[in-house]
Image (tube, one colour):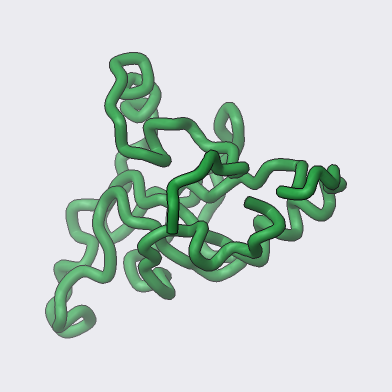
Length: 139
């Protein structure tokens, strides 16, 4: 897949991993998860499709609720330490893209969106690139 400008609204440092001093300070504001919890940043989709159709707020919200693709920002110190529960090791790590269920975790409102705090066993899948599984018309 060739890299093209994405229609996903997300801070650049979260999307491409580039570290900029000001952006790093923003990441430092993210709460540190305790125990077996993980802090995620859900994708926020643009309100305009690839073909230029402007989507309603309800449509954008519904798309986000059904996709639930998130970037792993921080992992708690006890996450994936239970060898009986995770015999093959961690399911994800910081900077991974993951898929979670619609109502997983707790939501925290932040400027520009929300964060989710979930338990380590609520990860459904790890994704190489969200653009691979999102509908083509929204990218």
